[in-house]
Length: 587
Image (cartoon, rainbow, N blue to C red; front, side, top):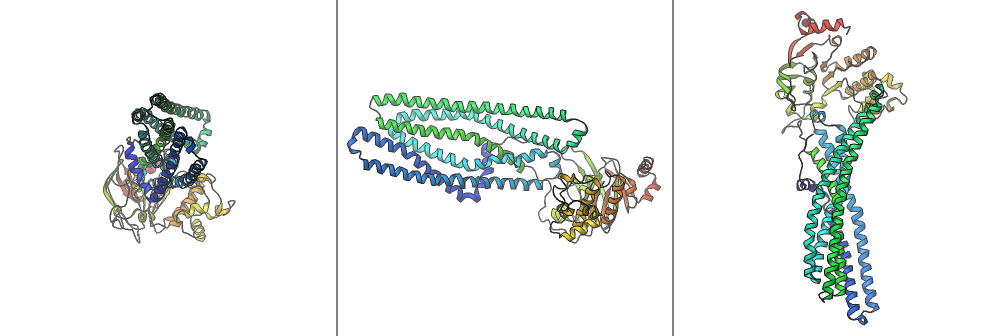
């Protein structure tokens, strides 16, 4: 998934709207930040007053004055404590909410993307983007406006106070600040690039770990544990090398800060000392000056140290934006209407399809009319476009040319939800969710009652084996249904479609991976499921589709033959050859 590099201001522009609903919290957070800043910057002024007063007229500095100043400062620290608590608690919650909102938006956007997107993107990378990459956004969302706001106030106030104490010394100090910022920015940008590398590679690691764990039986079957361990070791050490690079730039970054830190203190010591000798600055003013320079340097150091967190946050935002910028290919056209009371009539009008990434032509100028309730089977060599043709009906892909009608309505102008609610799909590769049998069947219609779920299971021929499971319908079936056999998983998927009760049914090689006994049981379930529905069946075993009303033979991107079983055998064309081959192989 190639992505262009985005500038910081672009990312901030995309991120800023997430503050909108929490604007009151952020304003209050910044107000509290200003209170803590005021409290912090009063101390040097107090020490300046006491020092100068003590040197000039010690007798005038009474205990009452000292107590009053002490109580005033303590009162300010109480205000500082309350404001700091608000910032630490409510401010962080605001950041967590923004992170939650972004993760929700990313997940919702992923639900709208087409099959082609997921075909070209690793699941591990996507998981990393919507989990790990957004963790740092909480800290970023809270601290980013806060740190820069505090830094701005302290820099301005420090400059004003320092300039009033000694303008020349202040100019010398502030001339060094831009040089410091420019030097640090160089390393800062490289830290961000290194963090981006880390995020990308951890996504790759996640993808490979997921691949290994899901395919662990294949790994063990081929005794390839050592091969997998070595591959992981190489990737793991590559991640270590990327981290080493990151830490080198971070160390150089921090060292640059410390060097400028020392340089500024040296300037204050030398220049301030010389000015004091010449009577250009009072001892109390020099103490206050040093404390304000310390405050200024602490502020700069905090902002620079925050830069690491800033870059982590920006990297997370950048990876989030990359998801949100992924093009939604399949969507409801303007004015799309719900599909109602579907009878199941399907019509292909001059339909062509090719994949966008490599422009491979799969279907070309297909014209076909299917009557409501008709059973149509698709056969032909692999790569002939059978699955693609079926995938176009629920708009898993959109046609490159031509259009498809359901009950006379162009499917591009009916809502996706209503279209897909009226189409049931049973595939060879059954996907069951981690959970119970009941949860997997009820996925066909989440609002269904337990009685309706059981009835659907009975129709699918699944009730008997489900009842024999340890906890019946409440049995946990493991990730992807690993605790069930292929035939059992297939019958649960059929029960799910029974519960959905669609008008159109697509069977994509639903029994090709099953043994003979399981195939027989599943075929009985499919026969019941197909009754009264428009059915399109993709099959390699021709014995399973001989009773179809019509058989379509696809080859060379087109329908080359069509008719029922007997008619196609009489033609002695491609279907005849496929049938003879199947019989000779015992299929």
